Image 1 (cartoon, rainbow, N blue to C red):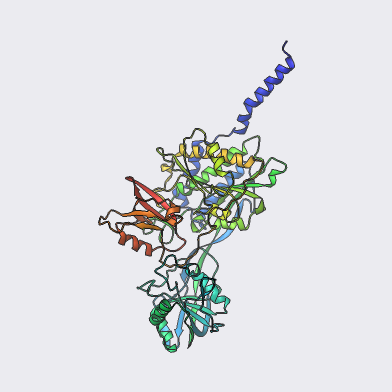
Image 2: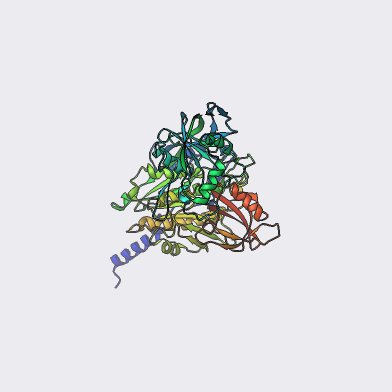
Length: 596
């Protein structure tokens, strides 16, 4: 005989199991909401959302209001986390340099570095080689040995004596800021930097492009041309060409005092603006695990109107860079995830923090500020998910790149487990460092996941528009990402951090001497690009996805027809820069993003 109570109980349990998924996934991500958000953020009215611009603040307000409307708790200053960015540098009206009886001309004979301290100094000069103070087991070089630079101008060469060697052991000591800091530590009053002929035959003055930092060097730093350096050095019985040759040949310090007073003032005007991250919280539901935090982030800034120094691949064209894929797509993604998560009756066990970062295009400024001024205990941030350019899923390959898979002990297993019927071709990159905001978290020993559908020919151009987004594809990426986030957010133990690659790229300070790390085809006589014969493992090109057989056709949007074009393009690049490289691969055009 059937027990009525047991039958009712079974029916009740069946009903719960049948209804539970609808509670868990009640709010689905829709194409329409993605389209609405991307079309607004990538509209001409926001003028490219440059960090520090009024339009950037409008975008931040839109994001903040969406998160508030979905029931999230706004943190910091009503959802905003303000910080300062430098948006430009120009010469002031008080730059001068007088060497004895000779008066130099600003912008002709000398120019202050953009990070120079605005200060007037009148002092004698000490020549100090390359400004090194190196003490390693395998390398020792002290340009300050035997000279007192306290209260003096220190004249030094940029670079090092092995400029033709991109694997030189001097590399990590050649950054200009590093050299200036050493001189400051030695008591110098100011620094005069000279470009060796081997670095730049034309001896062009450094451009007034800011280095994305509002901090100055703490003392005047002035770039002088070699002709002016000779005017100063003749009072010590030397000339710059002789000193460059001696240092290069002998690999020994050459330092001496120059009996001449240089009276100079540096006057650089930095344009500073207020930028803002947007921060909102979805509290966790577990009594214990709610004290741990998962960060879901995407940057919302882009390149504004483009132009020189903006990062645009066509810097000679001033036009609105709408940045629909980069990165309105990522912001729309985290807003959709916030709506889905906040609508569920069963919350995540861990607290989820949603952050829209500003200043990413200026050097990850927003995410760096966040990890240094986190509104939650940084030690309780257990994982970071970053979404950057997720709107161009290719319908043929369906390739989805996920970076940082080596930074957590179970990351790849979780990803593979949660791929259901989307048919993605998952490509894993284990390194935690990359040219997006997850790098700032990886540097703090936090496991990261970086979701991207990759670069394309519209990257960093005015043609990255909302009508080119694959909206159904982005929805599929987010549905997959949600399942991964849900597992990471609810698992009993957080992912254990693992170091996977460097936590920052070395600032080699090589000036225009950079390398991508591949072997070009030197023998080709065709002018259809530069063929790649081999790629050095772990070099910048390897990390950026360059393959043997690729034909490079452009660097940063500028055409490359042959080896000579390529070498000239390299001269325009700088250490630490993120560049785009157009290649032809199996007859198809690809765009790679490479960190030098």
